Amino acid sequence: CIDGSAPSVYSCTFDGNEASVQGGGLFCYGGSSPDIERCAFVGNSAGRKGGGVFASGSFPVITWCTFDGNSAQWNDEPYGGGAIHCTESSMLEIRSSTLVFNEARHGGGIYFDVTSTGTVDNTIIALSTDGHAVYCEGYGGTPPVMTCCDLYSNFLGDWADCIAPQYGSNGNILEDPLFCWNQNLDCPFSLQPGSPCREAANPDCGLIGAWPIGCDMVAVERTSWGLLTSRYRQ
Image (cartoon, rainbow, N blue to C red; front, side, top):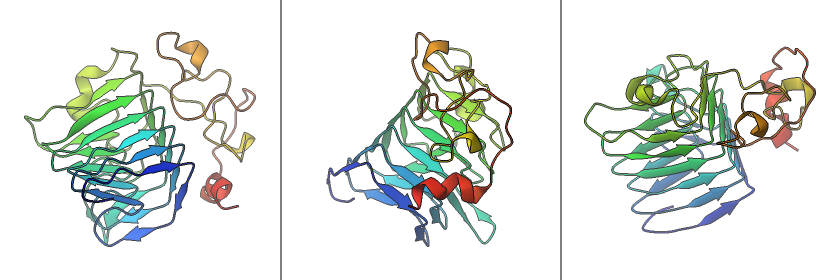
């Protein structure tokens, strides 16, 4: 997406794509403003920046999306934004989304350079296999505004770095989302009835994440990578 383009991308799956440098799933540049809704980014990779989505001087709006197992790391050279990378005065708006198992040393979930910022609402960022949930390069920029978000068990930290002061305010929590996992292979990131992210647990926020309650409340083990992503490969 380049040169001021504004595509609407609805109910699509970006699965297993690769970029040598940036934007494994989606590349946004030059004032573009894609509207991305109810999409899945699964197992995409970039050599340095934005395994799922790369935004440079762009304004992506992402709603009800799932980012599962995307990475920005090549030959053990870490960079940033396993799921999403924002640079060059980009403004990200992401809401009601679930980011799980993404990987990058600088921001397993979302990376912002010092010129970029955004808003992150009603979103789960959990279980990044490398990096913080959210990472801001350097200091002096404007950190993203986090509202009604659950950051949980990310490799290098959850409410840390530039967003640390926002923990415990504006509905932001640090709790196990209680995903359904292998109780619901079609929707493994749907929630158990006792989830702290369910709508009833957050009257001021509503549902946190892209998926509602989807299984019974019982103890389960995490399922395999293949089973987690099988719902997108039909």
